[in-house]
Amino acid sequence: MITLKKKRPKTKKRKVTPHYLLKYSYMIGDANGNISETSRISEDNPFLERYVTLLNSLKSTKGHWGISLEADKMFGHLNEKQITENDYAFLIRLMFEEYDYYQEDIENKFMVAEEDDKYASEFHGSVRSDTEYSFLVFEGVELMYIDEYGEKHETVIK
Image 1 (tube, rainbow, N blue to C red):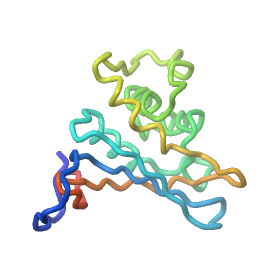
Image 2 (image 1 turned 180 degrees about the horizontal axis):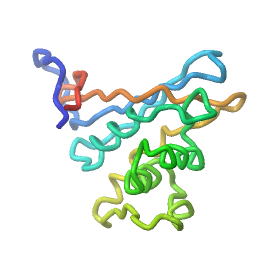
Image 3 (image 1 turned 135 degrees about the horizontal axis):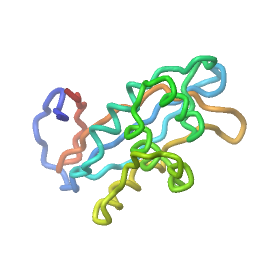
C-alpha cells in the first residue's frame, strides 16, 4: 500500500489532476556525475506499487558492480533469483517498448489487459541505460505524490 509520508496543509492554488512522479536516479559511468529522469504516473495506475518495489529491490548481479536497466541485464536478476519469472516478465513489459521480443522464452508471461495498456506505457519513458557519452548505473526510484493543489508529498510503500 502506498501512503504519504507527511501531509502538508492544502493551499489555494490552481487545481491539477492528482498523479505520481516517479524519479529514476542514475550515476553516470564510474561516478562521473548523476542524472535523473522523471515519469508522470496516473494516480490509479494498478502496476505502480509492484513496479517501484521490484526496481528498488534489485541488487548488483555477480560480475557487475552496478545495475543497468537493459533488458538483457534484467535476465541476470532472474538467474540469481532476485526476481521470479513473473516479476521478470512484468518488469520487461513495463520498462521497454519492445517487450514482445524478450518474452518469447518466458513460460509465465505477464499479460496486460487491453484497458490497462495505457498504464503500462507510462513507465518506459524514463528507463535508460546510457547517455550520448557514457553508460548509466541505476541507483533507485523515488515516488512523489502530487495532490489536486499541485503540492508534492513524499510516499512510503508498506
